[in-house]
Image (cartoon, rainbow, N blue to C red):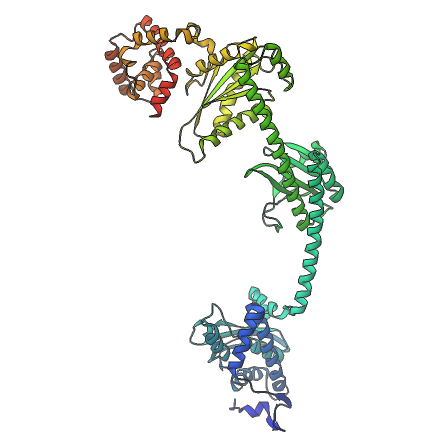
Length: 627
């Protein structure tokens, strides 16, 4: 190809002191002025819009130059393409050259098109470096636009040129590549983003329409929320609130508790919901309009579901159900179901406060009963207010709990949590109306015979202990159950029985009835305490004197040994000791007591003394263990 001069293609002339190129009025612009415009555009419309602006600007420049070249019928398509870098360089954009080319035409069909080349001293990269420093990506948008527009006009098919490396990124030169748009695959999205970028005014118009739509949506959601809130303030039930929503959106609504038991529903029967709830399958890749709202599919449609939070914990769920012919307005409906969850949270908080207040009243009532503040007639009358018949036989249960490890939660919080867990379980799971009082590390439960028979009481309490172990980790729960009582005025004595019994409960056997204490239970009372302690001293001797942790360890060993009937294997297993370690302790105990531990009479007396010790010296033992 012959060497071209600028005027060969542009036909530059001056007329009346004005410059013309190919009969088009032209002006000279310095690269510094271009850089200033580049800087201002980035600051005013952002880097992404600036890319589109300069790409389209370069594209137009390329198309105009290609139209002049296209008039030369003597040139082949490949020669016309090769003129592009030459014109580009003659205009001062960059020193441009083709390094690789693959161009094949079959008739009017382009079979293959792939060009690679280099731009050196790109004016666009030079200005970007001066104004902004090194870029994270290519910056020669005018140059790639020019190449794209020029070749597209020459070959009559959409092509796209992009930079593989750029001087603006700190590279020694810019490397470019051009292909048919159809061959770029995913990367062609970049071309279409340049081609389809909306004008700013059009974009502002669309943005305004979206804002108006959003405002209307928020107004609708706000109106719905206000109506639900007003119903809540008026003291209406959750069913009344669901009525409001169902009249508006005409879709089934379901509210569940944390165990997914249905609390309230509208627009669907309980049987219908139960038949589909197990088929729900979450759609993880569905567009989420609210972070808390999940979308589920089921056999007949889809569901929007959001959790109900109370004090940072999930206490239930709200769901909207849509059959196949219904399509949710995800943006609005997700906001409304979330507002419903907020209303339900307030309702649950109100219910929780009412329940806690009632439980506190009942606990205070139990304390007054045990302190004999009221007559039997007054107690019966007050019990009617809480729907509890205290003319019936009853038991007192002492539920003792001890936290085995340190907790991040404050002690008060743990006691409160234990009380609430026990109260909720008896009320919701067992449907029992129970008076619950509190002592340090102990809950006192008054349970009437009409609700739980004496035969079933141990099973109920054992189930409660198992439940608590699952709910409150690293805690030991022990229970003591009083004898059956018929006189409510004797509740204080029944409480003492339960507290005495729980002191003999252990990890292996967490529940003890007062009746299991036998004659010991009859003997132990305030009047006999000194006599009981004397009996303990006589039987345990040195082991009882100056109690400390080491002696308590030996006492516990002796207690398990006697409880297991002198069986070494079972004793070692219950104490988690080796048999040799157990023998060492038993030999030491025998030496201290100077008595035969195999003597049945002696075993009986020692067991009585040990049980009495656990009861009358309970506080002292607990204090030593805590040291």
